Structures are given as C-alpha cells and as structure tokens.
Image (cartoon, rainbow, N blue to C red; front, side, top):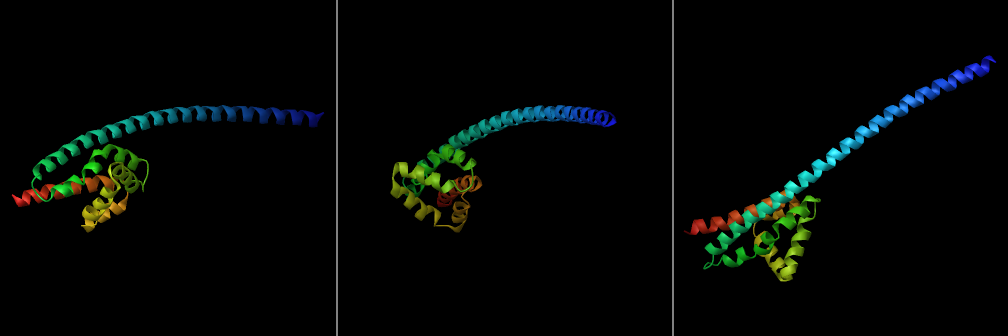
Length: 166
C-alpha cells in the first residue's frame, strides 16, 4: 500500500514538473516565433532599402559616365571609357548579385558583358583591369566592396585624365 502511494505521488510530481516545463517551453517558442517574424520584416525592409540604394547609385554613376563620354568624345580615351558602359549600365544587377555572396562579382560582370559582345569583356579586362595593379586587386577581391570601389576608381581615373589634359 505504501509503495503504491509513493509511486502515485512520484507520478503526480513528475507530471506537474513536465506540465510546467512544457508551458515554459511553449512560451519560449512563442517568443522565438515573434522574434523571427520581426527579424524577417527587418530583413525585407533592409533588402528593399539596399536595392533602392543600388538603383539610385546606378543613376548617379550612369550620369557620371555620360559626362565622361561627353568630355572624351574627341580624345583617344573614348574607347576606354566606352568599355565601362556595360559595367555601369548593369550596376544595380551586379550590386544585388554581389550582395548574395562573395565570389560572384566576376561571373555576373562577365555575363553582363557577354550580353553585348564576348570580346568586349576580354578587351575590358585586358585594357582596364590589367593596366593597373590597384584595379587588379579590386577585381581580385570579387565581392561587393571591390565592385563599388572598382567602379568609383575607374570613374575617378578617367575623370582625372581629362582634368590633367586641360
């Protein structure tokens, strides 16, 4: 009789313990679900703002390129500046692709150039990238920072050439 009572008390105690433990785990799960939903909302908002930033920066860079092309119409630098056109016209696409992970910059740039002419990509890498070690390092980084820095450096380089010639 005593053993049955002891087993019953033990069973009730264990049941109460697991009941409260499951309630705590359920609350923790609910809190985690709310945090996940908030994190996903923030992630979507950040993705949209980064895409907007890429698009607006693309417009800014395109304007700078058009000004450079207009400045270099009669000079020998025109062909080098025109090599930048496929790179800059696909700026937002390359930017977004670089956001998804490292090591995608060169692939997506090559794809954007191949939509125009595959030989243009070879000429771009030979004339523009391999001409300067700074551009080689930025090209070799193969990430978003390298891409943004490469575009800025190229625009500054060709803009600086015309200022020096004046």
